[in-house]
Image (cartoon, rainbow, N blue to C red; front, top):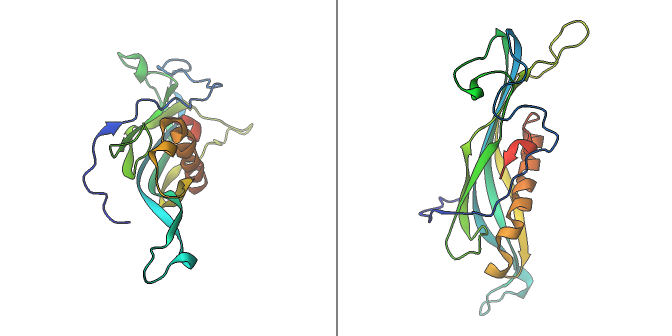
Length: 203
């Protein structure tokens, strides 16, 4: 994918939250605390994209350009998850964020070309402005063995989203479909890094 070049910093204001409704962790810290074993999960993702056309090659000739059948976004993603165990640790401090269980949603920022109605435009990036973070007491089996995963996963790749008929039109590119398209990418990332949590993303 070629470099994106200069882009205008237009942040989409209409992206809504996908936080899970059954979250049992305290979003501002607190909950279970004390000296014990802790599971910590961190995740981040960054995307860049270009809009491409799908042509009908059978309609081309030496004098006529091929017809545009559809257009789509080719998205390049970079995702990373880090899962660690803190043995015999104690989290406490002056702020509520420093103690006990903690849930911090991952925040994404969409920066796209001008001329859209809150949509993707023809090129842009989606950056992680706040990493997703979960800290909680570890899960153990009856024998006391820790069940939570550990390790680092880093993956890169491409995925196609936001397909629409014909050549690009801003009519089809609005804020209404941004969340569902971004969620499609998050679903792909969950297959690339098994501990990536799409529900931790606050779009």
